Length: 145
Image 1 (cartoon, rainbow, N blue to C red):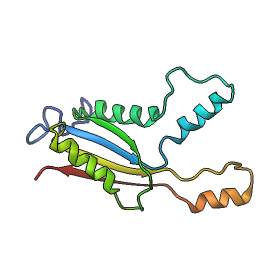
Image 2: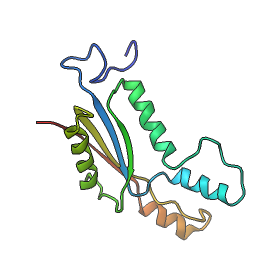
Image 3: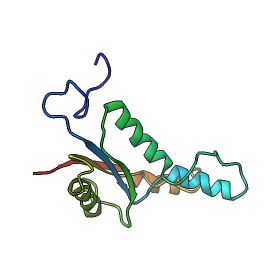
Image 4: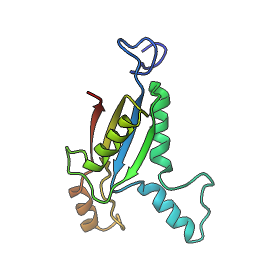
């Protein structure tokens, strides 16, 4: 699209301008950063801007900037993973709180789980186990009535 994507918060989008928040919920959390931190704790050099949930927050921030979304950007880690096709109640409750507090007019809630990674990818049994545990994501737009 010429001039970049248009979203609900960008001028030129049909209808009322709304503040759209992004909420990412995952029980697995940011595995890549957790692994890097574990490696750093073992005496290896760690990137200076690396902190827990930095990757998901960076991705959400990029999406918000790219699409001109002006609501809050939140990444949370859940106690238990949502089943494929479902959004966890904790995530929906937080979205409702963001709406009730007036922080956003609508919230895009994304429940995402990465596939489990084998500790030793060279072993065939670990690779087969990893293939049987596929990742999944579900998104829902929560708005006020």
